[in-house]
Image (cartoon, helix red, strand yellow):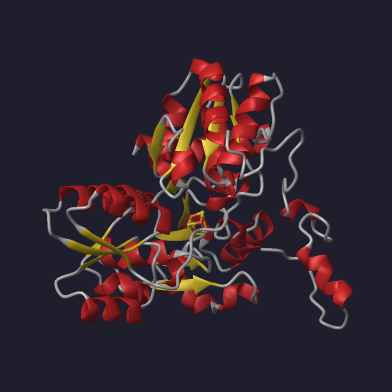
Length: 391
Ligand code: SF4
């Protein structure tokens, strides 16, 4: 999310400024849209061969981590695949590889850098692979929120619980204020832990995961949750609403999962008799409430794997994963829940040309696209991440 861009439709030139990545007034928000050296063309017929050769040349010096939402062409070269929790564990457990090539998005690579040793280098093949949800909570906004919570007298009893899908700066805030990181696999456990430490939770930045976990897993009511809008004074809430709330949800969402709708669930149930709806907890509460099964990415995979032949599933998560599940389970009917929802555009920025470019550069001795979290930010982020891994 760009905070400093003013949009004008008065002249074509002002529109052009918005369209040229990295050329606008907010250079930092348009990270890494160019790559030094030679980027192979996507049409290069030798691309797979080049990837195999570069991978072999790197050998044990490199570990390739692939998030489940990555393209098939990238997953084919992953040593470990997983959701953000599993990949964070893999990065933390890995002590020998010199390079961790992270095929995922920026916040995941930041977490890997925080959890690996100073000698290890974390590489993100395309620096423009960010996450719109993570961008919905900036450090300044979260700091202002905390000052407001302090002003109404609740910050001392509030524990931040921050979804993995957040910048290192927000993770650092979380560690500094005695909180923890969570993922969709362990959100229940982390929120339960937080309520043993304090009376309220500030849940960042995904309102849907926070709300769904509070209501469906912790037995709280929708009225126990309030929504903090960072663009409004005092989050758009009254001091009384803030004091009465058990969970303060940040107004952020995933631009992929947030698009699944009640209508798509009703439509697929009409169209495919016997279908079961399986969705990720980043979907809206009204969608999750009528689904048959709700679970993290890893849980979605395990549910499909464990289901009998002939079962039918309409799945509400990222399309690359759903397509792969459909190909791997031809004895089952696997459908994408909504016809109009697209791939995660930022996850898709990591493609085979970028992976080949990153690997060939490393083979040639050039470290490219290294993700390095500043030591002062890494210190408290690590506390928050280690708190999560210890739960
Ligand atoms: S799927 Fe959603 S939460 Fe995940 S990287 Fe894409 S935008 Fe971010």
